[in-house]
Length: 373
Image 1 (tube, rainbow, N blue to C red):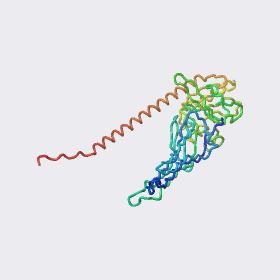
Image 2: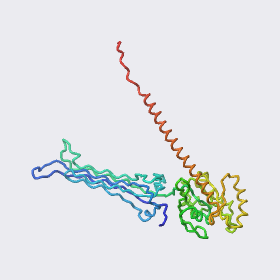
Image 3: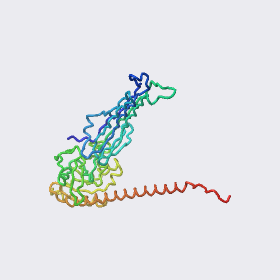
Image 4: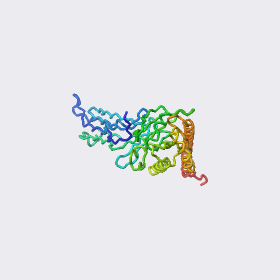
């Protein structure tokens, strides 16, 4: 299946139906009163996150989405049908933005999470609603309201515990294929990976780490060069980054320069990314000549305080130690997030309680009359 992580679409909720103008006409009731029924409401448009979806491919071919209109009212006080709400499924991790302003409207990060994007129009009232003592035969009804319409942009940002980053062809795809069941395309040329690959890595009792192989970045990626911003955004949701550097002297790369360049791109795209927990994997240790560069890189990276692992994605050397360490970092990050969430909820509850107490104290009790007077 083709991976698509961006789409621009036009959505319009259903218009409300027209109220009916009708009068009761029966054999023995020649001049009955108004009996025009109300119209139905237009359908709403809702987006729902669904774990079974992995791409925005469907929206590449369906750029206009129109919801059902409400039915018109009819005589004998018959109500028009309401439009059936349109539920649109999107992958977990989808961000919905207003196309014109770029304003984020919703961020669907949990399975089943919903967002009401466009509300359907109200149905018009029939003429039976407008009968009065002075106007017993109203010959007008209320029109329906138009449904909300807007142009939106859908952006899919992968939800992964660990992101594997690095320049093209440093061994990221080989690494994820060794530590998980993912089977990305692996070849000896740059930009082999053109879409992010997801894999699940078993880790103790945790149940599995979701790892994303982010396609190769280059200098200027934050400005859109190479695969650029299309894939930098997938790094935003990861908890820990594995930065892969190529030790091979035959690659023509300078690992120290690559390390600085990639982190510079992360910082320019989002300053928070450069501060994300990160470990370095010095790859291609299976090549004899790579040993000569290992010591040099270890000395270069030592001042950064970043944990460094020497590995071979081909032979599997060092991978167990790398995964165990990264897994413990992910567990710690999750525990900190949960603790912060609990603390925030407690703070909100305390603030609401104090606000309620203050409000209660500000209400003056009625003064009891002085019975002695």
